[in-house]
Each structure stands twice: as structure tokens, then as C-alpha cells.
Image (cartoon, rainbow, N blue to C red):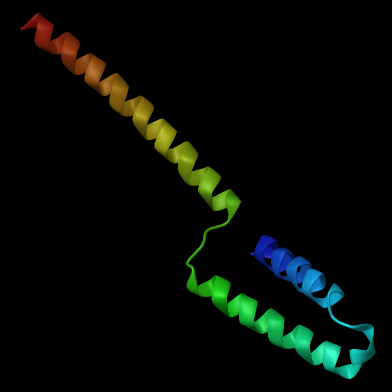
Amino acid sequence: MNTRKAFIDELTQQLESGLPSGLGLLREDIEAIVKASMAGALSRLDLVTREEFDVQTAVLLRSREKLEALAERLTQLEQLN
């Protein structure tokens, strides 16, 4: 979740830097609106963090290894019969 907030903050800064410096108070309002809009858009995308993705990748790898070991064992048992 912190990664998403950091991403939104960084993107907001980039957008902010393109605004004319004379906007003053409007700049803060625009920043708040952009942050809220981006947070809402990203939350609707149903994204996962990199950490969550890596954990699921590791789980999938372990499951695949177990499945391959079971398939090999089944082949060996079939050859015995």
C-alpha cells in the first residue's frame, strides 16, 4: 500500500511541476484533486503489491514442484504394477 501512495505522490509532483508557478493557492487544491482522482482510479483497478505478487509466485513454484514430484512417484508406482 505504501508503494501505491509513493507512486501517487510522485505522479502528483510531476503533474504539479508542469503547472505555472503563479497559481498559488489553486496549486494545493489541484494537488488534492489529482491525488484523490488517482487514488480512486488505482483502487478500482484491483491491483496487488509487488510483495503480494512475489509471495504468490513462490507459492505457485512450490506447488508446481510438489505436483511434478507426485507425477514422478505415480509413474514409478505404475511401473511396479
